[in-house]
Image (cartoon, rainbow, N blue to C red):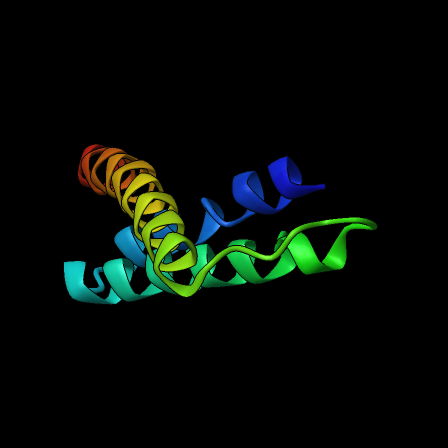
Amino acid sequence: MPVVEAVLSLIGPAYLAYYGFAVPVMVIWAILCAALWVWNNRPSKRPGGIARSRSAGLMFFVLVAAGYIAAHTGVYLLAQHLAGLWA
């Protein structure tokens, strides 16, 4: 399911780009999606999962957020470009 959540989250930046929202709104969307992904996949939810230390959890969140921001930025820029072609 985490893959489905990640792919569905890409609809947001496409919508934001098509309707002309600014880049900071897209970055906030990506960070919120990353936070939701990390929360839904925390080790304590799994049977026998070992909780991470606070610093390791924060570093993991930063890595996931950076990946989400990169993917969302690519989709945002592509949708913005295609919206310009359609107009």
